Image (cartoon, rainbow over all chains, first blue to last red; front, side, top):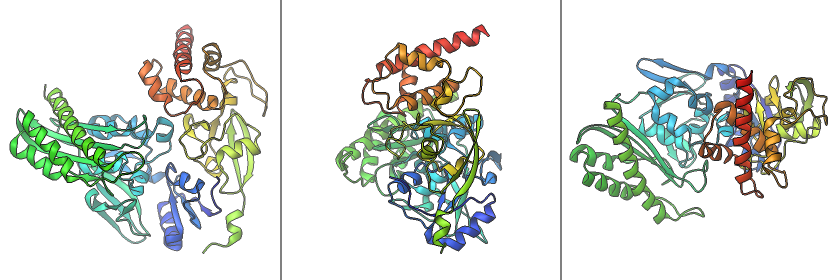
Length: 291
Length: 180
């Protein structure tokens, strides 16, 4: 089908976009890359009376290093992130996850802020933001606040964003250089949403585990941080046995739903298998980094 | 609340398509692919699923492949587009819109040669996606070609001929570059 009629606004400044959002409130939708919103409009699942297209707000598109963080403007395209040397070296997990987001023609338009604000729990970026303890900068008409990824994701397609706020920046702290990482997922077809995905960042020295961070996608209304599984690796060290134990624990921590794509049981099983793979892959990469 | 007439008020847009400057007057909700097909008469880009899955509407926007069903025509104001009609025209001379073609692009020639199409519905999307794939990776492996082309669905060929066509085109383009 075709989109329903809407009033179209294409501000070029963030202030202007925020004023429009304040004016239209709940009747408005912010259009970033459009790779989720445009299908909703085409299917007439969304009927905003006003569309605030932020694609011409150039100040929201950048990748830079500041205060030891990598800061990415919300309108930065996934394609730009994929081909960024800075991201590849400082945030290799974000790079790897980006290559799993849809397909290249989708990543040409799709943005990091749009993906996070859309908050599909099966998408890669929310899980990466969660596992890397990213901070999101939310700008309202008069004030700016920063929230952790953990606070940001509230439920299915629901975030801590107020109606008059826009995500403007995502701040990542790179993991220690001795860390390994992985994003493991199972999807029906290449580029589809994952049935389940698991992200890992592990800093280990031999069997001693300095930090372990794990999160899963597609297993509940938000991405899920697998803290009890992380604790097992931190407390028991990384051994064949503790990895199995952590993977089994991960499957206990998630509450997946059944749908036409996969049963809850299968998703739980995938959580265990993918957690094990994500830990093993991260450890291998960590060793390569240390070597 | 917006006035009802604000919704249907048309906007003037100017953009370059296949090297030619084009102007249009569009309702904001008009999809870019519909503008190309209905207003410019460039029916090479096909409308399939209208939600970014099938890839038949893939064109180049400022040099990068993207879905023209997931963009509004107004968003392309000021942009440089290339559609499948522009591929045959890479040789150089300006292409009259619509309907006139130049010699086939090496990708098109390879699709012909290697049975890269049957019904042809997905072909424009396949060609534009392959074009972008080869400009980001001039020597893709078969696996990389398959991953890249997974952005477009073909229901006829079983993909084998398409993969072989892209491999052959990559060779041709490489030889051409080395010859330069």
